[in-house]
Length: 300
Image (tube, rainbow, N blue to C red; front, side, top):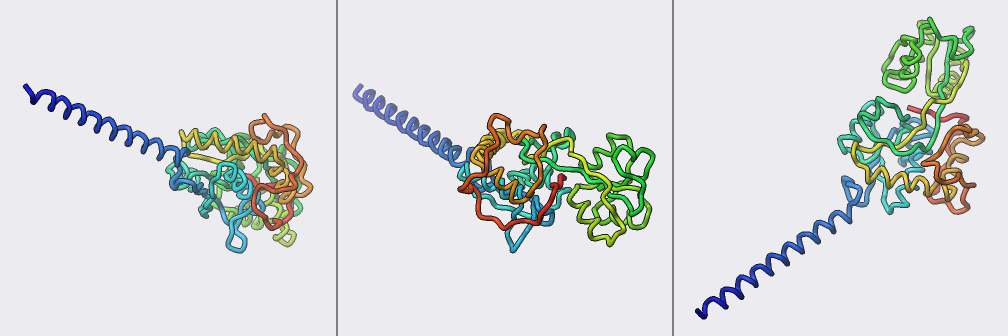
């Protein structure tokens, strides 16, 4: 009979040990979650896929990734106490790499489209872009509404491709910008719908063989892309974007990278819940070299 109290005490002690271990395990799980609330590949580091050669939006200069999109992302991440690690990639692979979690976020003037929403989720829009219409020198084409029945070239998979298809122009698709430029120079295309800035530079470099006939606002804003279902990261980036809009960082970077570029009346930066502020005297992001002047941004 004396063994029962002893056994009872032993059982109670064992149960208490199990409960304590369970509590410690639960605390460990909470601690891990707290250390990485956004499901990043590396806690505290926002790994961003971007491009190296599309100034002034995203580009590599003196070994550092910069440009409007990337400097803005650095400022946004700073509000979350995250360090940004930029990695160069090809645009054609970027969205799938984001959704596969190779990158936590995509930063490359990515225009929001319904088709792309099937691959990734987008944050709120942070910028706008323009389409450019390049034509061979001497062409009678002066506007986008003259393209019906013409041989129009686009780079496959871009929003310019989407635009031409939506307008039922039956475009000629090429894999890269050089292919489009060569078609114009050879006279095998009547027009090229291009990202405005790239079209302007191509015309300037063509020695008079190509001219810019027109330019128009892209129908959708550009935004950062995150993996499907990563709502915590998307919502955190949206909140921080509003903060850098409110404190003047967004305005400062706009003036730095697109001096003199007017902001369309129907464009809303961020959620629209905060007012675009005058440039802040104390920048949120790092000091950045002034990018090449441009009157329009390029949208992918």
